[in-house]
Amino acid sequence: MTRKSVITTVLVLLAVALLGVGVVLAYDAFRTRKIDSYAITYEVTVEGAGGIRKVEYTAVPDGQHRTADPTTRTDEAPTATPWSRDVIIPAGRQARLVVTPAQDAVVGCKIVLDKDLGSPKTKTLTENKAPAVGQPITCSATLDDDARFGR
Image 1 (tube, rainbow, N blue to C red):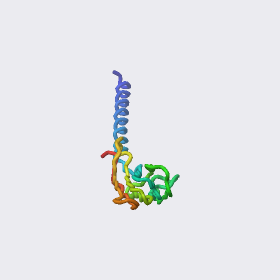
Image 2: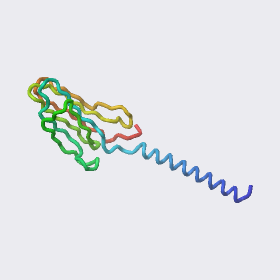
Image 3: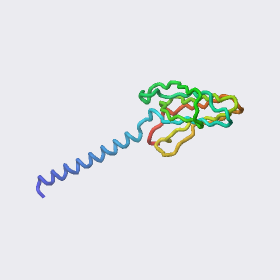
Image 4: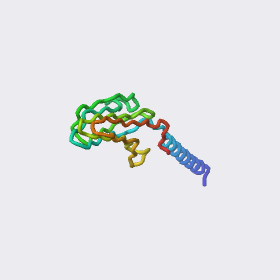
C-alpha cells in the first residue's frame, strides 16, 4: 500500500467513527429530552335520560403553542353522549374536567393520557362517578413535569 492510500483509509475510518458517535449522541439526546406537554382525552358518560347541562375543561387555547397556559373552556348543553374532547395540557399543569348533569342523569368522568411515554397504550389518569342523580362531578390530575422519553 502506498502512503496516500493508507492516509485515505485512516481518514475514511475516522469519518465513519465520528459519524457513528454523532448518531449515538443524537439518539441519546432525543431519548432523554424532557416532555413539555401531553395529549389527553376528557371523557364523560351519562346514565339516565337527562343528559348533560354543562362541561367545563382546561386546555391550551386553539392556535397557541403546546406549552401555553391552559384556559377553561365551557361546552353548554352538549348533545353528544358519551362526550369527549382531545386536548393538550403542558407538563406540570392540571387537567381538570367539571361535569354538570341534567336533573335525571348520573354522570361519570375520566381523564386519559393518550400515549404513555411513547407506548401505543393509553393510561387512565383519573376517573370518577357521581354518587347520585343530578350531582356534578370533577376529575382532575396534575401531569408529570419530569417525564422523559427514555423511561
